[in-house]
Length: 120
Image (cartoon, rainbow, N blue to C red; front, side):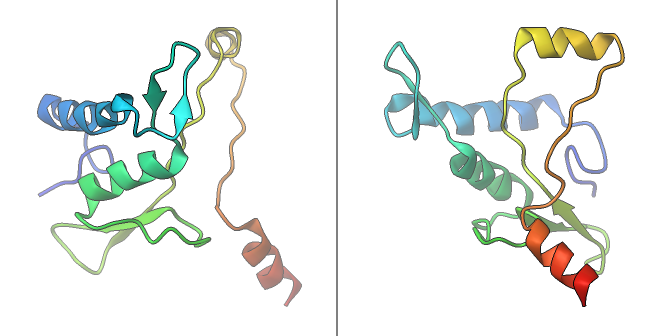
C-alpha cells in the first residue's frame, strides 16, 4: 500500500479528509485570526493534521530535523521524513514562479544540529 502525497498523488477522499480536518479550526479554535474574525490553523495545528493523516499519531513537536516521520506501509524499514510548510505565497510571488523564479524554504527544523555535526 502506498502513502498519499509521498509515494503517489492523493485520492480525492484523502484531499477531502485534509480539507475537513483543517476546516475544523474555522470554529474559533484556530490559533491564527483573520481580519473577518474567523480563525484558521497555525503551523503547529497543520503539522498535527498531517501527522494524523500519515502516521495516526501526534507529531513529536520537537526540534528534530523533520516535523514527522511516516513508515512505509510495505516495508517498515523505510521511513519518510516530512517537513510541513504552511506559508502562503502572495499572488505577486506566485505569478513570478511561472517565469522561472524560485522559492527558498527552510530545509530542516534544526539547522544548528547540522552545523554542530559539520563543526565536529
